[in-house]
Image 1 (cartoon, rainbow, N blue to C red):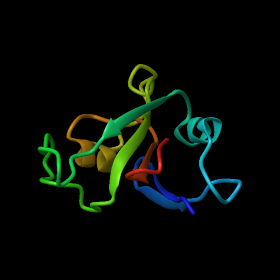
Image 2 (image 1 turned 90 degrees about the vertical axis):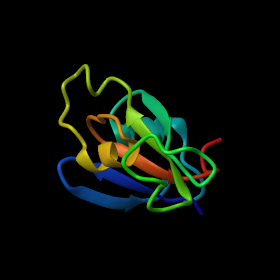
Image 3 (image 1 turned 180 degrees about the vertical axis):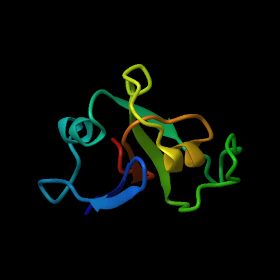
Length: 102
C-alpha cells in the first residue's frame, strides 16, 4: 500500500493514503498539492546532494511533488520542503517513496 507525507506550510505534516487504498492517481495528487504537479527528485545515496542535506533524512523518500505554480501565485514558503530540496518551495508539498510514482 502506498502512503505519502503531506507537508503544508507553515508546520503541518500529515501521512496520507490513496482514496482507493492502493495507488495515488494524478487527479488525487493534484488535489493534494493544490494544482499542477511538479516532480522534484531529492538527493539520495546514489545522487550528489544539491541541498543542505547530504542525503534525504528518509532514504526511501526521494520524490517530492509540489504545485508548479505556487511561487507565481505567491503561496507561503514551505520551509521543510525547501530544506529537503535546497531550493525555495512554495505551498503544499508531498513527499513520496522512491518507486511509488509511475
